[in-house]
Length: 232
Image (cartoon, rainbow, N blue to C red; front, side, top):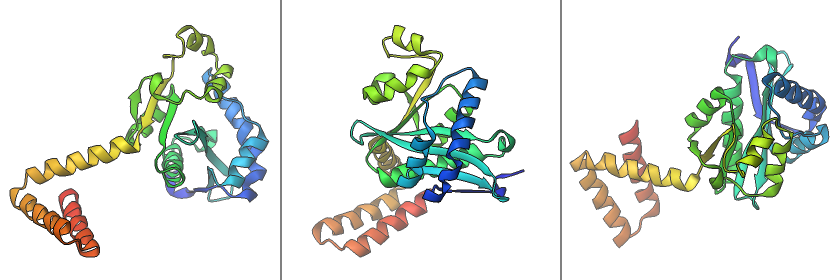
């Protein structure tokens, strides 16, 4: 079984019929891991589908295979990709990664300026997050929205979280900050240009022409060409 056997898409309103099955599997999975999750009702999950804020996966035979949804906190400043679940019979096929990739892209599309974060104890999820650009952070860098932290009350480690005054717990906090990502990309671009003097000189000439006499279309194409050339 491989990832080519699955369809991963933004959930549609008609997928609400799978809400009960999804919520049940979330609870069973958490129980098997010995951890807790923020409990959601079938109605809540169905609502995410109707809003276009969820990703669902199916096997090519039409069987439900996986799910994840988007939650926003602190008035849209933070986004969490929550409730990631893959049906047990479809695990180890790369489906979790595909779902996380899709819901990450959806989050970036709907909330391009928001910081995307997650709390997890799973090494596999940490690896996926890292591949997407997330970095480990302290809990203080996450949303301080009380409603989010109330979701931890159903976790078996909640007492630890309280004892640590919400500064840390058994979960690892990871964050994708679009502002930092843009800064890092620009920095990398500049560093690569410095390694190629002739290309750097050409880049600066183009940049100077844009400043003196802006030519949006021509300049943009030139800069895009240079960027593609450097990182292809």
